[in-house]
Image (cartoon, rainbow, N blue to C red; front, top):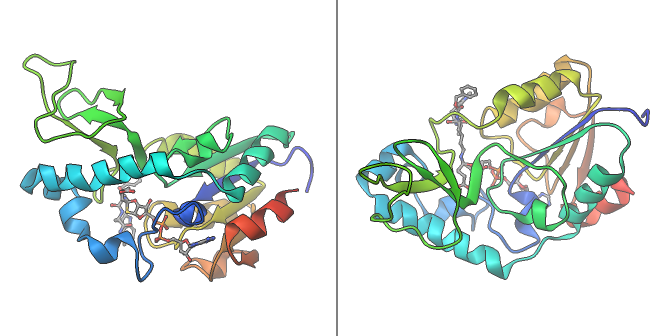
Length: 229
Ligand code: BJW
């Protein structure tokens, strides 16, 4: 691959699994313990905002007890040292890529450490719990804050920028995502349609397995560093 090759990387929950964060669809994953429609939809938030805030408060608090793993660090090295363009897109809402040293991260499903005003849409850094009564500082009268998270039925962030990069990519790498959730699950098809080489890192073949030209199965913290270096 030419040193000027343009790379797009997509990560999912599996890249943070070895840091101790639960994935969604494993037998002991988050969706085994919580109903998607209760905690990850706009309708669930309207029905019971405190239940939703509690789900994200717990996950926000957990971030302070976990650290980036070798996969996050390998990707950060690739981003820093590759002479061509590298775009890192993550579906994850944790901050482990940033803490692992990644200079640029696109969080297409939002970020746990940010909150958003439901009226103005203004996004603010947020480290603490959010209660159903927590109010914004941007509106009069002050409106409630919600987690800055993309729920089912909502439009993921930075889509135009991502699709432009997919259309120009020479190499598309997918790491630790099951390929169940769109539009991210469709990125490999988009990259291939434009001629990119497609590579998957996962514990097991994902839903999109047939679209990857290369696959590396095993824990990303073990398979990725050697491949990157
Ligand atoms: C390891 C490992 C290790 C473990 N090493 N690997 C087309 C067809 C059908 C439906 C739709 C469609 N388009 C849209 C939809 C509807 C819907 C959807 O996709 N539904 C499907 C379930 C069918 N999508 C949406 O509603 C999205 N919005 C949308 O499409 O808007 C329309 C639009 C799009 C574009 C332009 C214009 C308009 C929004 C989706 C929001 C997803 N939100 C969530 C929750 C919020 C974030 C949070 O709380 O954290 O995001 S759902 C959840 O799934 C979370 C994740 O980011 C996302 C993906 O999960 P991920 O990361 O793949 O995790 P897992 O658990 O599934 O997989 C982990 C993988 O890691 C496994 O494969 C393991 O093997 C592996 N692994 N350990 C390597 N050590």
